[in-house]
Image (tube, rainbow, N blue to C red; front, side, top):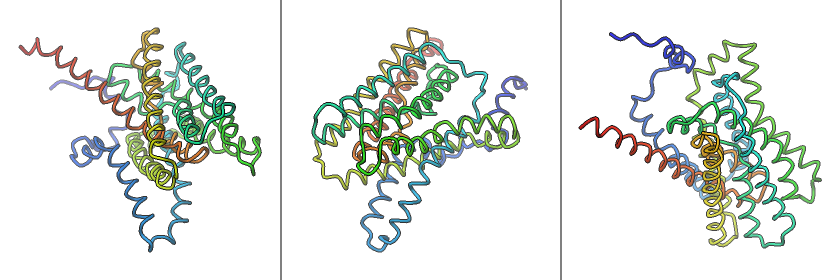
Length: 350
């Protein structure tokens, strides 16, 4: 019998597979994992309609809304914490293409903000540009490294950019959002501090917590690392919640249908542009796949939450549609990779 490679055994121990049973053989788990996106979105949509159309549940609405407002950022925090617990700090090395992509994100967000601030436009176009702005400044999804690895990219480069893009969003969102969507009863400084107090800890504290646990509580760190796979399911729960919030914004909006279509098309444009520019920029440094995933694959749960909470709620349709667009692009890219691999193995099989 062939002995397992020592390095493979170490990797297995770090990933926590010795602590959890292998879920891949369970067909129900596999089905849910393969169809998490539609299941989560349908669940959130149905939950909203059941709650809103059932009179006997009306007294529960304020309590449920309060729970949702607290639960969503907690789920995002937990997902990031579990992901960053698996990160090896010594592997985090900023690269030149990271800087170019961060510059694009910041410049594009500021351009959308300037248009919203100084160009007169009706409410429909404001919602379109607000949706675009959120899609552009939103940080990279923690799952981007997984997709990049499947396609032959660098997971460590993606993890580094994920941290950097979270830092950028933690600074830019509190500065830009109150400027774009001011409130008469709150000053700019007050809105800035309020958003900073919620967004900055949400995006950066998971990484700092993971580093502190690794240094001072290694047993707790190892225990959390063994649940790394749970981040995927936390994402599914959070996606169901924000999907329900997006449907609520659509149902309560007086905007015409064409406005909702325009916001969704804006999300499509942002998705295609960012995947394209990410690939072009990363390609100049020999990391085309990683660059595309870094700029194109977004933490859409966070984006929807930010849009719904701090901007016009209807603008959350932009990042809500982005969920579909980025998954369509990722599915197409993975399909192309499988086709190339099959074509490469056919001659040897013959």
